[in-house]
Length: 265
Image (tube, rainbow, N blue to C red):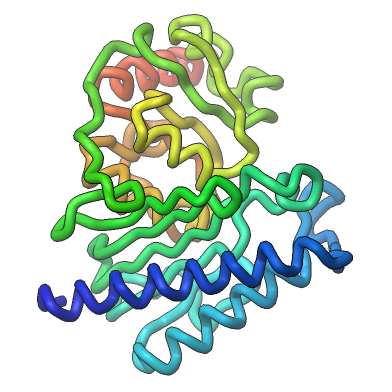
């Protein structure tokens, strides 16, 4: 994408996300319509659906040839994202937090062109923190440019994890925890990525769907984080998969611990 077109994309996405967030805050003063999806812990609300419909309409008007991969329905399968312009939309990331806490949730959109990371945006709605940018633009928190991730040993930083994986000690995750400075669990990929991008956490280990990772991947990789699956291979972003987001040193240590657990099995 040409630079001027990229600037326009950035302006449009920031405008759409802020508009959707304003509507979200307004609807939070009214009773929510709450439905379950795969389980009682997997929720969707009328706000999730309304936000996705809003983004879908904006994308259709401004980028009519683009594809949409969204958590609440999509017009293309995630496997097609290597062709053309694709928008990955998570209209409310951290819906349980949204319902139970009314904070610690985010709106996320990642944009890819022919399989290449183009632009990412994550908005912490209640904290009014907007993380945005890409390889050609740099990465920003509101209007402040963010620095490259510090490449330190695992022992020097906090890690963010998937609750179920930690409790069941999947892939020796408890050993990863022991060798780190400690664990933090946020219940939202977007909020977790905000911590990584700000330098408040060093690594994130979880199982994420394409719309959970797309925006954060653009932002994190631009700042020097690596993103690999539990076997140390590139992620596919086609279906939900286990992955590690970390700078090089911590990544190597985490992969080594997980590899040992797999050998022990």
